[in-house]
Image (cartoon, rainbow, N blue to C red; front, top):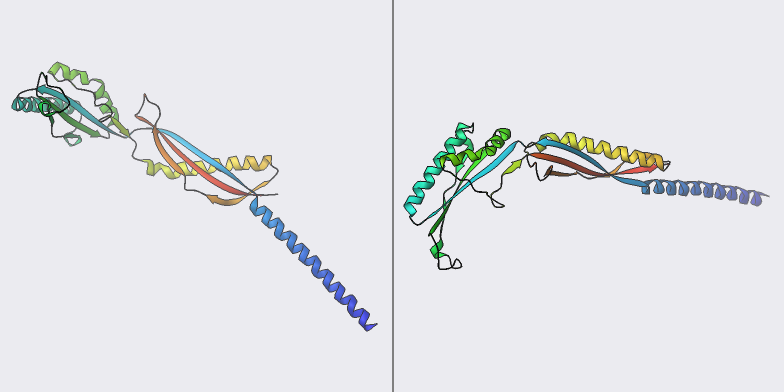
Length: 236
């Protein structure tokens, strides 16, 4: 009788142990499943701002055979352009004059033998300013220089007018916050649709930041863009 009673006690202990073990296993599986259930979303924030810096290369060219005369002419042209700029509100500190670049066409190997002139001289005066609107207004009336005998040539791809926005670091935290909030809204919509509850952030990146021209016609308007990728856990 004592022996039988001992077996019963042992059986009860084993049964209870199996129940506890099964419960722990189930709980572990549920927790594992919860950890595996997640949603990854992107948050976007965009903002259009005016450029706050402009770099304007003013290019002029001259051709001829007399080097000394060309240098006198290019110096005269430089003085005319500088006076024009300062007369229209550009400060001397915003103007820089690069040394003239001279090409001796007689030394060019692939230019052919017949040339109407020997030298081609290029002068570049660069305006760098934070007064973007003022500079744009001067660019619009640079044709006035023709009245003073100065012709401005297009800088092309090598020397384009460049507009910049230099205060991105100041506005970036606010845009980052907006991108994160937008990501959470998207995640909450997904959780609601899938009959789940949104949990904590599992993983998040630092965000991708970019500054681009709004379009090809308005390079002085910049589009700021912040994109962040965030993963949230999902719960039943």
